[in-house]
Image 1 (spheres, rainbow, N blue to C red):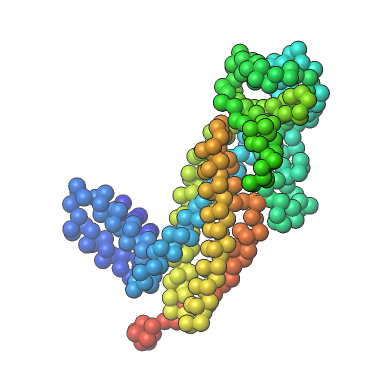
Image 2: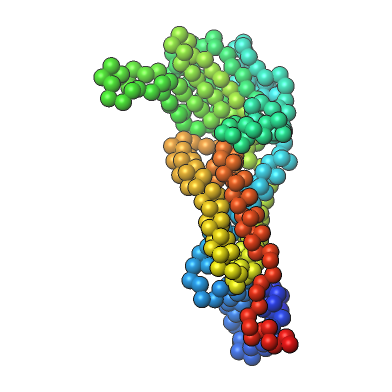
Length: 354
């Protein structure tokens, strides 16, 4: 087993000291300490991959890079899992609405299935929508939904809400507490605006099997209007796919960072300085959207009930800020290019070869 754990070390290190490490482990490691010895081998091996033994910050920089790569990899893995989820069926949606309101004429109802699992401006992602994705409208890339609405409702909105909750329960839907949101906002410190007089929209979320129903009771000042939207719940495969992708992405990023770190360890000082600048700029481009988006989404989740958490990449500020991610990838590519030239060999190793 210990021989396999030596894979945590870089190849050159294994060739030079692998036999010595294994011999030491066999001599000093009692059977009861095997897990501890194994953990130490992996820990020291991963540290050796980073090179720069005198550096006190290289582990922190490697961790920052590995963690963000793991998060992006987890997002990609869950995205792939979502692509295999059960597609939306407009007939299922229509049947669900008619089951809730068989006596209510529907004024508008989607009559076609969505073109893809994720849509941007009601269409699947394509090269034609690349400018929307990169130039500020990436937030429009979201889960497909089917919807409908009708407006001939009683004017007593509490009665409408109570009737909706009763019908959801009778149809086997688990529903959340209603969420109230103002129809419009007041101008701060304007004495003419009375917040208590602002009409309120009501939103109710419900789930049955893998269907999530979002019901809006909108106040249009004359009669309530009810809007329905149906999406899919998170597929079970997204969770193992996300965890596995995170672990693989983190490990791969650590090894990649270690390779570049060892390659630039003895590079020209100017090349080292440029590599550090490019790496820092790339991490800013990748981490800044996360530090902006994640707290906002967390606050949103704490304020409203959710039967499905927001998609992982939305917590990373993607694809709303996809341009920053793309520029970060380009910057990291330039950083890796600086590590490609052959390393300068120390003087003692050069003499030994002769």
